[in-house]
Image (cartoon, rainbow, N blue to C red):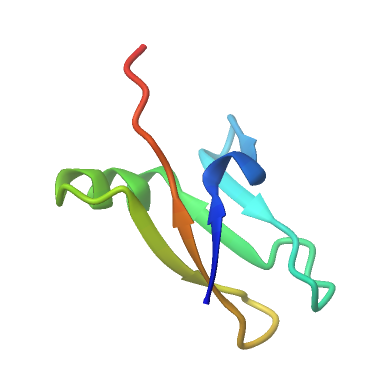
Length: 68
């Protein structure tokens, strides 16, 4: 399983989603929502596992919480 950083995803402010294309060609292969990330943070974690919507590839996505 490949590990990537959330900074590699594109963030859509309007929808509150982070998306990244997959090597299979799916433009929005990996999608994370703010709600999913908030839940993981509440559990004390700083990573989430997400699967591609177009193939069987899974990624471990690491991130840091930034207080603004």
